[in-house]
Length: 283
Image (cartoon, rainbow, N blue to C red):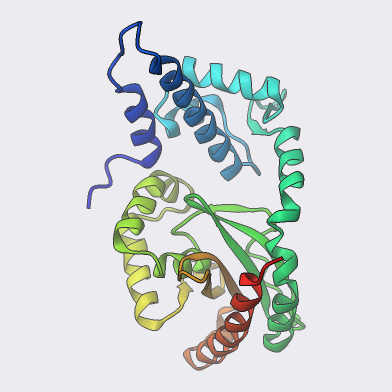
């Protein structure tokens, strides 16, 4: 499968390569407006995925396959509207205050962490380890919540709000497990650059881990074994079987032998079976 062009690149090039229309065709303004929205959306998502360290304009332009002038023009508008902000000392771009306000406004209707909290707490207490709620956001996974178990050695591999490209982490693998191959191909093509730049991962290595996870029946992250941490995960699916989230358990590697992995997966599966019914109930 081809990995030469990312989703960001294809999105931009599809809009940029659209045939020019005659002046009397009314759809020209609509096409231009759609292109502007697509580009702004791409930049916001990109900044969100790097919000802890921020991004320089050159990095944003390269990752989105935009020239610096175009990227600067869009960023200037996003900053003026409050969706992004530029740090004066470093010149790096971060999410702005309006992004936070919009997120707060949407939270009451999409507060999955509140719904899942009792299950996360129970799993953490049963296992003794750290439990994470991961939610899919486009081509990324976002850590929505984290609960600590009583075991004294903690494994804080993710902060709440942290964003990773799908393909990195047990939660990502768990969600990708339930997607068709065509969807997996699209996701990994979109994330190939970021997986390599941020984590040193290649698409073949992710596919190998995904194949193994599918065979075992749960996502297993062995990319962090150098840190002495192993994480396993199962997806949360909707009534149509689509994976939109995952619950992961992280522990020091000595606690994650094959026998205990089976025990943890059994606990996860039992809890998620009940949770999926609760999530599907009208609210």
